[in-house]
Amino acid sequence: MVGMAIGEESFKMNNPSVCSPNASVCKGASCVVAEENVNAILSTVMSTVLTTLLALVMFSMGCNVEIKKFLGHIKQPWGIIIGFLCQFGIMPLMGFILSLVFGILPIQSVVVILMGCCPGGTASNVLAYWVDGDMDLSISMTTCSTLLALGMMPLCLLIYTKMWVDMGSIVIPFDSIGISLVALVIPVSFGMYVNNKWPRTAKIILKIGSITGAVLIILIAVVGGILYQSAWIIEPKLWVIGTLYPIAGYILGFFLARIAGQPWYRCRTVALETGMQNSQLCSTIVQLSFTPEELNLVFTFPLIYSIFQIAFAIILLGVYFAYRKSQRKNDVEFPENKDNETQSESSSPKINGGFQPDS
Image (cartoon, rainbow, N blue to C red):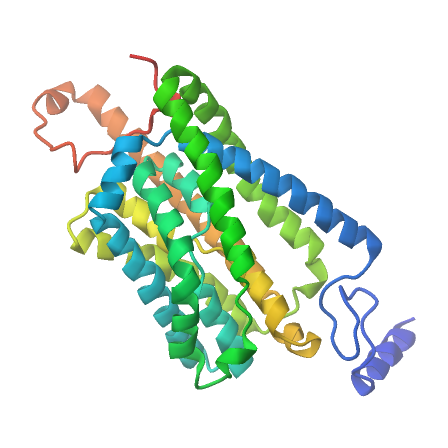
């Protein structure tokens, strides 16, 4: 049996056009995405279900957004400007630096930078809620970054990838960006309307949607891992970059917001908006732009980034919960500190209202 296994491996090494029986896709010398009916049907069904659930979750997140505060961020967009600098300044530059430091292949460098050029993902809105971030800022940043991506993605790719690839070879799916924008704006707008008209009902919807959103984030990561489990064999350097990249986004976004004088809860919001990228959009661009042979080298990177950005966001969420619990414990043990507290509202934790009792 061992001899047969060694013989098979030797045959595959001498015949690179032969794919492993466990490969997701077999087309010539490339083994990437599954074309089996079961995977194709599962992918279609899960995509439909997840898109529907995501729209409902964004509707519930909109139930925590106040129209006046949201418009206030648009009229005085200091927070949005900081987010813009993080989203389209820090992230593409960080992707460029990581590509040079690790010396990866040109085609891999393009995909790493492409991930940094994508707008913020909607998962950041759910996580911003759970860390008591500024939901009005979070929604406005995601909306603006998705809208600005129509122009900023081609510009950033032109600046950072021209040394490796012809810009015309990268296909920017403007229709997908437009669909993402509509799928974000419409549900959130309905949620804002409900919050304005029926605030008590909005609070109930928010409780359900926040839990559903947390489950959905984990579900997306699990489903992605199952659908593309045979594409996990990828260069170790990309694993390292996929780990460091979102961490850098969270840390740099947080400190840039703090340097700009933003309160802590907005710093948390900007950090999440910076590190959380729209990895689904990146995957779409990669599949539209590269040949099957090239996909074999880069296809899994958006999924790797997606999983690590969620993993580290959950860790940060756990740290914040522990911090908040310790603060509450101190308030109970030393009530005089709470009575004498002179901290301004802007620097104290802002608790989102979904799980707070009605006043």
